[in-house]
Length: 222
Image (cartoon, one colour):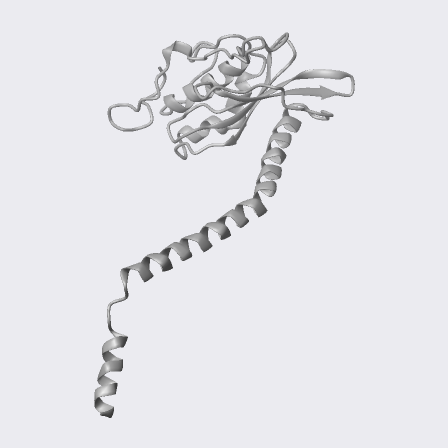
């Protein structure tokens, strides 16, 4: 009798789990994970936003030393536009220029940039906040010496005429050029932003972000 009871216990121990129980268990686990993820996102959202604004302020400070404020203008960017935000920069004596957040697409992905201009639309400087271009090639567009070439420029720019490209990094060079050009030619900004929030579409030289046939990031100056 004892042996029979032991056999029944062993049999029950290894019996298949009913499908409904498995489903209920998985649903419960997913629900718990979802609640935990929501809690983590809620707890970190504020800090992420603070860090993002700190990076923006640091870029603006480097372009406009001693600025007093730089509120974002009421502008909603369209998904196809490179310009993502516009900040009106003021100093002790009033408005001194603008900073435009642009996001052109490079060889390794989006390049997050800040373009500073004076109130007439002349570039006072360019700062790259994040970049994932090829180290030693496309990443050279983030060199201070290269970006300084945009200072004093205005209007539509052409690679090879107004700005030199970086050998072996044509796509990255054109990406930075398109971002700066989108900022310098932002429709209605250097006066007053129009009511629709339209921005100029910058596509200097009909640029393409296609890689060269050999799969490398461009074969030199275009």
